Length: 107
Image (cartoon, rainbow, N blue to C red; front, top):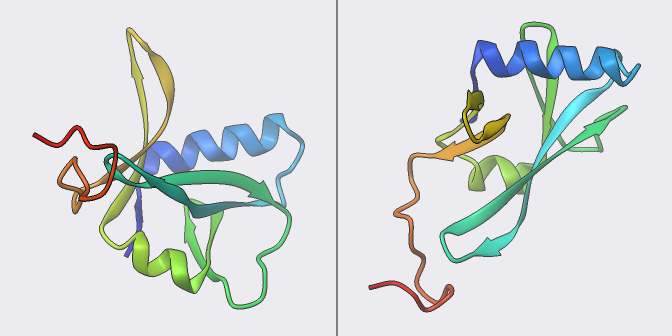
């Protein structure tokens, strides 16, 4: 199951308001594979596609395909601010940080 922190939901709500898309939701998807495992993506979507699961947190809708729901099991979406900048982060507690067949830098 994907978890969304309250801080992330508040920031998504602010983003939707800023973009004038209050009726939209946030689609969470697997964008491909990288050295550290799955790469995730986020997009603003007006409606879920057929078969997508809808999660809600603090009045923000999140859309997940059935394939992404499995791949994203154990993932947490958060919003962080640091000296390097701020933004949404997707934390995967199941990732070992190196995937076999990835970039070849596993040591």
